[in-house]
Image (tube, rainbow, N blue to C red):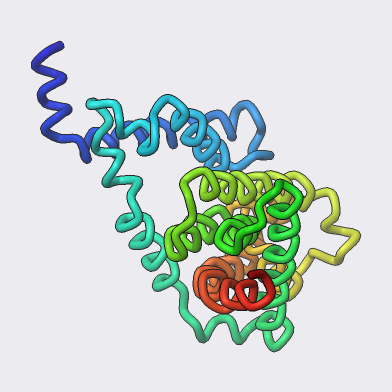
Length: 248
């Protein structure tokens, strides 16, 4: 055991990847076999991660010697690299297929989510601009929240709330999409692009469309990907500065 512990301590980042891989493997198994894909594996993994974080202090599990590699793996550098890599994988010209309404749906979707997220922050008792902006960004997606929080200096507990808000949104979108698809005309590629632009949570949109009609998944995921990148751009800049103007 002592030899194994020394190996892990000397290869903290590799062990962190192993731990996250096991969590992801279990999450997707749980999603497929227990929830029948009604709750996406990514959302389950995030819930597990947030729960495990309570075992640590300010750095979560990274405070435990065996899990020090989590500090680097879960740090802002690799997180932001993953976000940028995802955005770079999308071709900007393809969004033209959705037309003007697809473009408008992106801005409208981000604004609506941010607005209600900000209202939630006020209801929870937060009245400072940084916290309101971070939680509002989290209502966009659980990626936009922490990216925004890190950029404007939010506390770790506020960032955690923003992630939780994004996870809840993902679960709601996943569960309700198949139920309301026929009522809102979600049965073609055009409406799927608009749907992805309005809601933005890639995991939720993808899982919800997969349960509705697998052929619609690529179209909804396309605009949802741009939603994340646009949210990371707007929330810590224009939205934050706008709130600072109105809230002193």
